[in-house]
Length: 178
Image (cartoon, rainbow, N blue to C red; front, side, top):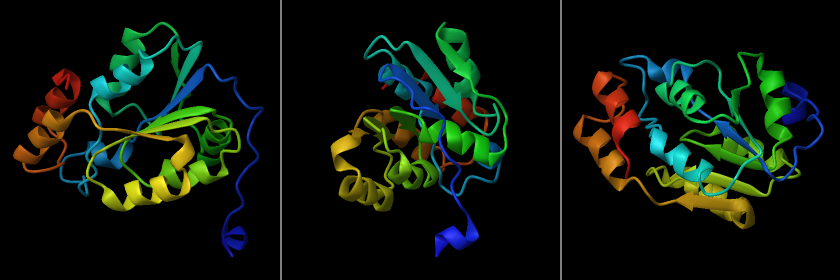
C-alpha cells in the first residue's frame, strides 16, 4: 500500500565498512518554539562514536546546517564532509547506501533502516523516546547500539523546560561532555 504513495529510490553502490554516515536532525526543530519535544543529542554524542575507531570517511546527511553540531563536527575532523542540501530522494539514496549510521531523535532513520540492506551498525541515543527504542530493538536489534551516555545533558534540557531551541540549549549541545 505504501508503494502506491511513494517508491523508495535505489541506493548508490554500498559504502565500505569503514565509512560512517551521521544523520543530524535540523530544520524546523532548530527554531525557537518549534521543538515538539524532539531533544537532539549533544556534540559529544557524535564525537564519542567517531572516536571509537579510525573511520576512513564520515558523511553528515542533514536538511541544512542549522544544528550547531554540524559545523562543530566539520571543524573538528579532517575526514568528515557535509553531503549538502538536497532533495529528499537524493538524501535517501545516500542513506540507503550506508553500512554504519548514527542518528539523533526522530522516526526517519529508524524507519529507513529497514531498507538499508547492508547495514552493519545503527547507533541511536537513549533519549527517552521509548516507542522508537522498542521499535528499533524489536526489528533492528542485531544491528543496533543504544547509547546510554549523556544523562546529564538530557537532565539539563529537562531543567531548561524541555526542547525549545535557544542559546542555552545550543550551549548545552556544544559543551556538555557526559
